[in-house]
Image (cartoon, helix red, strand yellow):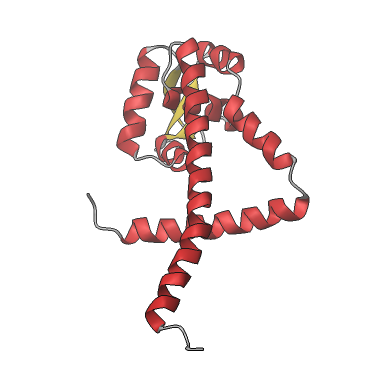
Length: 165
């Protein structure tokens, strides 16, 4: 019986990795797509965009944030968030207000209309994911958190090292 060639061993190893990685990637795509679909449906019902719903619910949950803090939490560029906030301000959902803690900082604050709308909008994607996560045993949740943190750190390193587009 002859030993397998190094090329065959390398191909087999690559196939094993592909068979492991592809279903995981498909799951990420499914979760992302379902989250976006649910958010878009909710947004459309209220005459908003998905990102506007995200900003409303984030401000409702954590309170006033600077533009930079908002950008960081949503993982979007300041210029993108500026456009979203401009439209929300135009529609009377948020205002920009100088911070009481640091007068140099401008915070994004929900108006009473924005607060009312935020309360009326369910966080369906987050609730679905939270329910799915709660159904997992604690050890699995802890392992998943470690793995996702490692993946996020790796992706962050790759994107920080990438040349600007």
